[in-house]
Amino acid sequence: MNRLNPTLPLVFDTRELSRRPGSMLEMRRTVPAPDDLGDIDVIGIPPGQPIELELRLESVAEGVLVTGSAHATATGACVRCLDPMTRHVGGHFQELFAYADRATHHREVAAEDEDDDDEVYELVGDLFDLEPVLRDAVVPAMPFQPVCRSDCPGLCSECGAHLADDLTHHHEQLDPRWAALQNIATPPAASPSVTSQQSNQEKRN
Ligand SMILES: [Zn+2]
Ligand SMILES: [Zn+2]
Image (cartoon, rainbow, N blue to C red; front, side, top):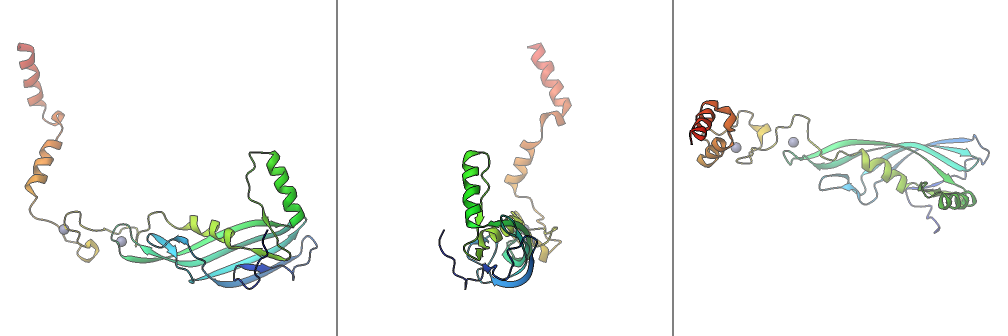
């Protein structure tokens, strides 16, 4: 594995944590969001936007167990009314960063057991890179179809008016083509007299 740059905001140093299993270290850090955290056109955390991290590092026999949470403000557009919107996003995670020799062992075991495709994160010296863990925790926490509010009325399907600004908005006159479509859409079962006349005629013929 490549060396990690300890000055990167998502690279953490475990040097202060004793290697004795059971030792613990808690920390908070505010980091700038990395690139491509979500889809900014739908909803995502803009690069550089602060992400509040709370971490607990725990020494275990295999390496360092990292438990924590990430909180940030995502930016996007409402899928109904297209207004810009922001949404608080929180994600939780727990991952083992294995000592290098243990990680190698893990991979050998995983290679024998094809069902086990768990990714093994690895300590690089005393350092670990939280970015992939952060990404896996935060991206699925963002809504697929963000709405500015749960009862957002969206846009008028006929003229595109912003309905939240004008709750009484409606169109007095139905488009004649639309009215014709409505007649076609009325199922024959809704007019039983016509149906019975038709079937009587068929019998006579
Ligand atoms: Zn909306
Ligand atoms: Zn309209």
